[in-house]
Image (tube, rainbow, N blue to C red; front, side, top):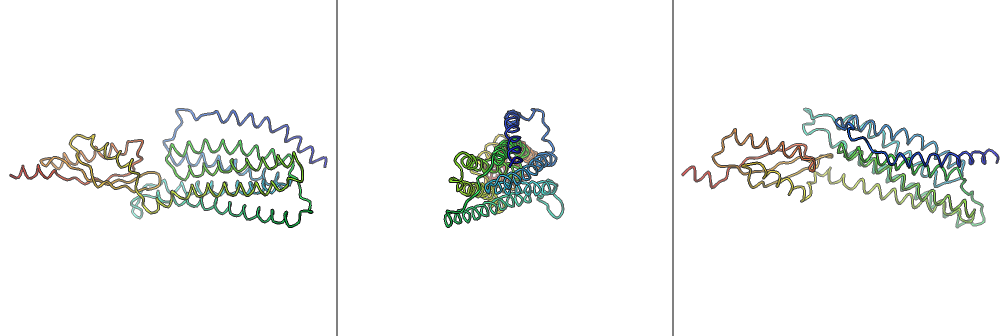
Length: 341
């Protein structure tokens, strides 16, 4: 008993210091001159950082859950373990989806990123269902045998949950920013995995805190909070998985994006009536093909140069994330008829 109290005392002493540290870290911003020019290296560094933190949190939560008699914290540890698995998937997958197109994959390897994103969502979904199933079983046992005594979570469990919230929110912020910069859906999905872990630790901390304050009579809050955690994880999994279905089915861009493409094309002198604009989601961007009218007496060289200008303009637009452009040139028919006459 004395060892448990001394461990709890150390946790009480350490927690305020760690909270102050991470509150300062939250205010940190990546320097303006940060290098995001190499997407593969950026993905590797940010995901490896997350993997290291997740490994530490898995050990901390499992130890706190077992030692502190908290099923919800053990459930949270399983969630962090799934984070570690998806970190590994992103690190391995990024080595392949960033490769340039080759003879066997003339359109590149970007769809692999979508598959990794789907894998992350599927792992989260399974974790959420497993946690809900286990918690429902525990609650059933409690209601079936109300005279049976149940352990009340310890202060160590509360400290571990609060530290997890701080660390995972920090990981979400830096990972999401990196994912947006390199336009990687898998990295952004992994960032939301971090945040779902942070959010799932909130009911865990609340349940443990209530049990500590009010005793064994409220021990049911521990598995009840586990059900809430599982539901939150399952919802996060759906938000991650849903967009991947459209990408794998070659869904096109939104109407607003297509309209933006049309407006940009018409900024090129001589390019008229862009039509039959088709887009295909490739994971971290779109392929575009379109038809455009040019003067009936325009030479092949002039039309070719105009097509290059359109392609350059679309690819350089930061709002569109265009990866490749195919342009079909059509002469304005009325001008062709006039010249022929």
